[in-house]
Length: 301
View 1: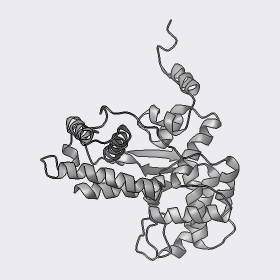
View 2 (view 1 turned 90 degrees about the vertical axis):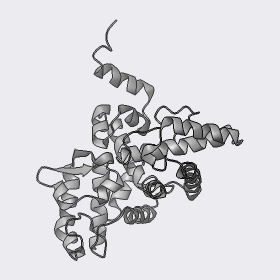
View 3 (view 1 turned 90 degrees about the horizontal axis):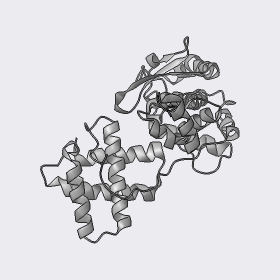
View 4 (view 1 turned 60 degrees about the vertical axis):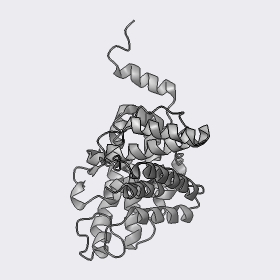
């Protein structure tokens, strides 16, 4: 993959799924463009060839060029996020920043919607009989019911949904498959969309896709982003709400309801429970309790 194509894919992910600001996107673009320029004229001109030692040399050069600690920390943080994304997507075999020495920066996470606002959002398109409104309600319900990433949602095909058994199959980062249960209310809303709205949106162009746009093609991540913003505005939900906010709300509300941490980890498709811990703003006491339950020697004297 051409180095800048990978950067463009990462920036698209940040914009659509993470909802980062234009200013933050510009910073990532500059940092990663500088990193690509550093390697472009060397044998390490593919991201999969870059090693931890190469990146350490890059950080050293930044210091020699007079970059402040803050600037170097930001550039390393950009590289961490970027290589972590490439590894999760299966583009590179290993993450060379895993043990890279650098000051750590705090991680910003979206806040969860309140239960009240979540109910308002889910009800936003329910009174409209038009097919796109039925589609919007089905998408919002399914995303909140399953905690999927928006990329997983729009990639769903008809074969990935089992209404009879009440589950959905999706493919996460690195093409990892997981089966997620869907509660009966969301199943019925999805059934209504499939039986009454989807046939009216179909043109034959994307016969396999579950969620279609008004041209009969597979709905894109950007398309869902516009849908979400329109319905938030419609019911007066203020502040930044992104597709990632719904995933975060799903996890947070499950944990507040008493769901085991390991169960939420599996539903979200996280390889490590540490990721789930950070993702859901868990307290250290909650994590310790779950650890003590799970580890076979946690009760040893």
